Image (cartoon, rainbow, N blue to C red; front, side, top):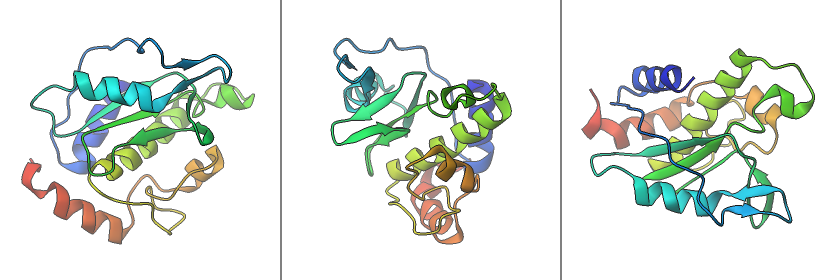
Length: 166
């Protein structure tokens, strides 16, 4: 799935994309009282482990993520920064009591990876409910979105990624 994601992001964004090695989930990121992992703590570790030649980095985890003020998050990103994280835990059909579907999981993963990368490139949430930069509070919100940026977000992203386009 990571190779397929790499190829999709490379082709869609016209940016170089590579897969780095696995990184263990950092000690201290598990919050026992919530049975979830603190995405900010993991994000800090991803940032520490980011290769020097990386433009941006997205960590993909199969752990349920949270931040202090929200019950869960699909991902987290540094606005205008380098690192972001996406969890596939709640993107899985099984999480919602349904049969596994790798096609749906992959589409949701692409949407959330594009969303968090958009934040890394400085984009904020979009009011267009179908734009990949729309804020997703539920998996239904994720499913409602297209797998692309709206024209406005796409133009803003293009201007911010121009120096690295291949």
